[in-house]
Length: 326
Image (cartoon, rainbow, N blue to C red; front, side):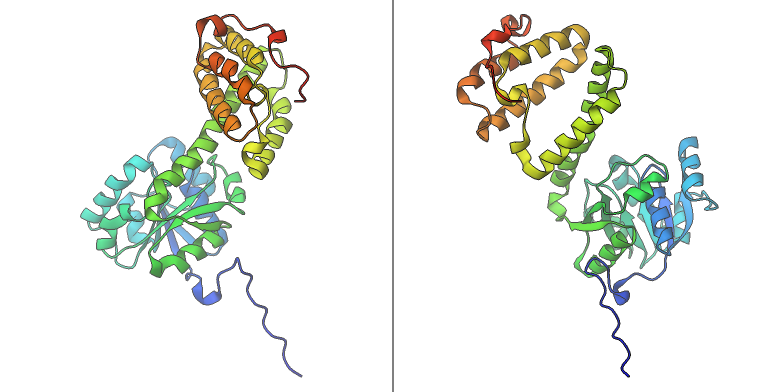
């Protein structure tokens, strides 16, 4: 009787021969990202052995996510680990790499991984010249610095840049952490990172401002009110892009927008500039995609240009378009 054939690996899984051997893992910079990635690698069978941390907060974070892993100096991390995660702020990364290379801390054959969205592997050139194997693995995820981050890595896209000979290793590491690799060219890294920051970072600011304004308006639980609305808006935007635009700007309700500006000036003047900037961009995109009628755009853009007579004295709602479905 023939033995059953071994099942083929899933397309999302690296073949056994492509998976990296079990590695000792070190973290330089115990911010929100590094300990979470190291914890995910531990779940995949790798062994965290050292972490560097400076502040009390980073030391506590390392202790919670990587218990029993010693906190040591960065050079000692490199001495102990086969795979080193450089998880420091973007602006600190070039100096850190140069310093480690200049002091002889980098070992030939060592996997050196940074998690910056801005940089590809070129920033690791000083370490590459010392024999390191450079990888850029940027998780497209917001991190809290807690254990929930490890769970959020499941299905998370990683912006990956790697030399051709290390592509399989990079892919395998990302998949082992639960992520999905997305290949980003070296020269495209700054644009890639700007796109993510535009969406994710500014979203936090917008939501926080919205909650503050709802609280001032007397809403007891702004988060409960916004949750379903923002979830639906995000889902619609991901599915339909600009076609998902709704609201007074896309409809050309100049009177309503003027009333918004007047109320914001009165109750939250710090939000006016952001509201106007986003409304102008929304108007431009809605007009370009045929959502905003050209005959309504002139009055609307006049409000958004902060004409004193319009912004300070909202138009009567009767002057705006009526009867359109929202």
